Length: 299
Image (cartoon, rainbow, N blue to C red; front, side, top):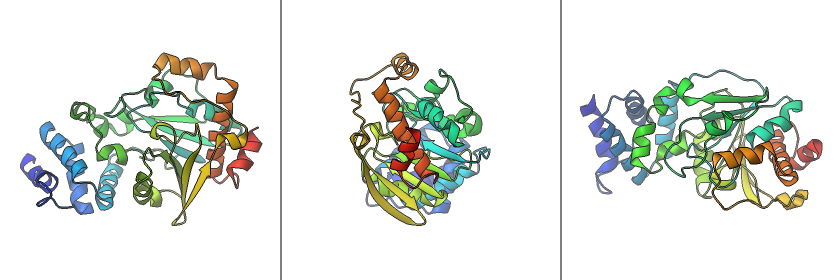
């Protein structure tokens, strides 16, 4: 099988003159072999690096997601919204999903997050780190990838040794473990918005992409967001100051303990930030017609 995989390494790793884009079917086969570890670790690393530099195409991402679908063990959670956090962690500000779940519990909206061991990238605090150390609400649902998608979790050592972001960092953002109709994820660089919209837009009734804090969907300061619904994409801007919020986000790295201390004893302004992010969730899930209406409801 390792010899079969060589053709895919050649497709992405022989340079600009000889590289070629893979079809959805070819990419699906390559990813199936990677997830089943039917290639040597060195071959997997070579492919992921070459694919990153080639660079990746939307058609190839469709193949990756099709492969993912054959492995992920999903459990349907009704009235849920998936929060697509990156798996390389957050460094400077606390995650808001636990505070948001508390705010949203009275409104019959389930929050879905996935977590795993730290992947290559920012080297921050992970969703799993936080979830394992907080008081949970009934509407907060955590999916551990080592349980529901062990094949990609088992690639962690290879990816960490490679040490850089690859196409998997994009494809794994929204794995939809709960068959949610609604989802939200974040981008750090604006050009990624279109890529995410093309890759994931058809997989949800409504998808929102936010240029949020540390490349997540969390709103800490003025930012843009895009709504993908019914095949249309619209651009919007949101500013916490318009809601009377004057939170000062951190630029310094914080530890897991510091993050948990902040979440266990949130300031009044952080609670307002959590309410604003919760309002966005109510809007995305079509429980309100606008973020402003949702924020007034929560306040």
